[in-house]
Length: 390
Length: 233
Image: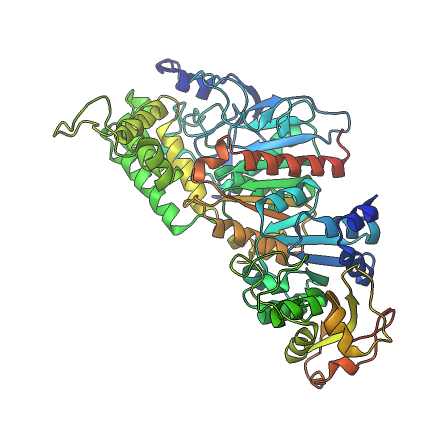
């Protein structure tokens, strides 16, 4: 451990010494994971915004997506860019930091300070790499529940998130129905589709095909499979957008040139854009973490955990739900959301559902989409009234 | 005051619908608009209400009121609901805009122990006059659309609806007919006058249990249900 090279960039530093609050849980307490592994010690890095009220009734947990992190509404410590959900979180925003105590934790298996494949394996003194146990969405939520316990919160006012964050929202509501007053799963599914597993496998294979991946031991060997991870990000990024959104933004426009170069340079703006997306991603994200988190999404099938019936997962749920999908989202299409809504209805749960018309694809949940903001505000405000939050 | 607001909005039919809903029951309002009726039912009848609404704006208005509303439509989304999931399923002024009114009505009767359906009456005298004397598709104050842009693709008369109810095995517990001013037509008037003067009718129905006799063809002769303030057609 002592002769380990110091973190070479900001991201590696954040994985070990995050600019966040941390909860550390040491032996003998361990997190029992779906794989059967018992994880100890465990660190959860998290951010909070606003203040917990005396009744501890105003806590709102935000669950981040695959490549998100806990920095929801502050400048990112690595990229220096604004928080990833500042359209939704802040004073006067739908997740109003003047009214609610907002919590967001880096997921288990992440690389921004919570325990993951970058963390040191106490058994070897080296980064876990592939020796880190495979993480599931349920494991992430178990870890978050430990954090919520630590904060002395019995019932969360609301759990909200999009994509992989939405999966965690559903898992929270199914596993801890009494602890979730309101749930807002956005652009998500109760199980990852075959097509999405396929996309993820392409991304993972791109990482593993990079010679610098070294069987997941790149940190120990002092290299980094940046090219593989960048390709994975480029492929995934396409799935977050839509045909019409890409065309509107880039068309067939050329990048800084008047004519085709008859080469394999990035002639087209869209190529240049994707290369840029790949490049900036590898600066802030750990390749092994990408493998683990995509796997967690692939394994997610909420019905399978409840005897094959999604209805059972939500039967008699006291939680009030608002499910949101986007018309142009082909990664988590509206049919996925409708399956959730059907199950909630069949289980006699309280559910609202909105399909928002937009051509911005899956990424719409992160963007300034007025209908999303209006829906969220209406749902959160009415739930706050029902909960008696000023 | 909620009641005054409804009256101002000239939806007197909503009050008649509300009177048919038992307090504390589970209600699904199909085509719930901005949630006016669900809100009224929650306040006045203390119901556990849910809604289905097609328009984005309508759903957002409902969600902001704290109502549980799903974006969808009667044709596509009723199939997803389990049998007997609700005490009352309401379809207010919407049946004529569905693609498959018969299937929708069957679904209402399947999902709810009681269905409340209100329909505009295409047999109203003003409609008949426009078609018979002017030779034109009717446009009235309530039915403002021209034939080429109307969402109302399946109009029926009061008598037609009663026939459909019979065909799908529904029992009409109660029927209320309102004139243009929203006043209830007298039970003492001859039956055919309601199909002529009634601008809309509101029906409380339930499906006949399997194994029982089919609904008599002449549903019009059935006695009014308990609490009925107007005759059953």
